[in-house]
Length: 241
Ligand SMILES: *[C@@H]1O[C@H](CO)[C@@H](O)[C@H](O)[C@H]1NC(C)=O
Ligand SMILES: *[C@@H]1O[C@H](CO)[C@@H](O)[C@H](O)[C@H]1NC(C)=O
Ligand SMILES: *[C@@H]1O[C@H](CO)[C@@H](O)[C@H](O)[C@H]1NC(C)=O
Image (tube, rainbow, N blue to C red):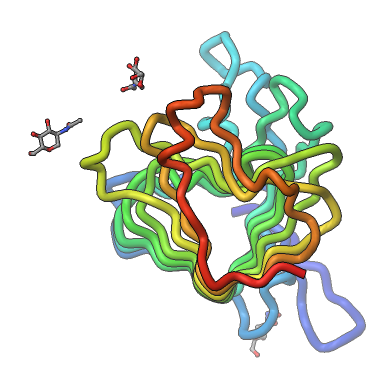
């Protein structure tokens, strides 16, 4: 990695990697470990967006815009910031810009920060656990087909008009997937939907979360397919300011 080490007058060092990082499927058991209580000081950042040209011609697309892609199983990260700095106007076509894409199974993220705008965290497939982490974005900023638990996380909306937090994709009632947010804090500066139903059986649950007044009253979107409303899940024992 082309690490840029910047000595700061205080007691820590900032490690800023401006690089696209890919951990391929055949490299299991990789961990990225930053320094304790300094997640903001170890940053992996890149700036591709969906409309960028790929080396094969054509555009990169959302999935390949990721700054960091994890394809292997048993990945772990702690005290790291994953960033995509290509932040367009929320919802602007071609401006999807993934900071972290994870399609390996059995991954664990503890005290990480994932920062971007539209489509920040591609929680693509597998079972993943996010604990004490901070995810920031504007539109569909946690999306994919995974089975994931977000526990005691900070979910921060930077939407401008109306954004959306989760876009979980589930096409069959038999899929054992879904996003579960437990004891999370949902806050930010822009109004958001809790989720948009991607696929006929999209599943997202918020339990015991604190919802700041950034959630739009409708709560959810069926993505213009009324059939999906029956599947738009409930949330319970959740406080709203
Ligand atoms: C991490 O901690 C080690 C040992 O305390 C220190 O030498 C290093 O500079 C720290 N790195 C960062 C990024 O703060
Ligand atoms: C779900 O599983 C049941 C039992 O295996 C099966 O009969 C049904 O066709 C499946 N449904 C879908 C949509 O795959
Ligand atoms: C979703 O449901 C609609 C209406 O039943 C159906 O036409 C469509 O094929 C379904 N989509 C998928 C991906 O199964």
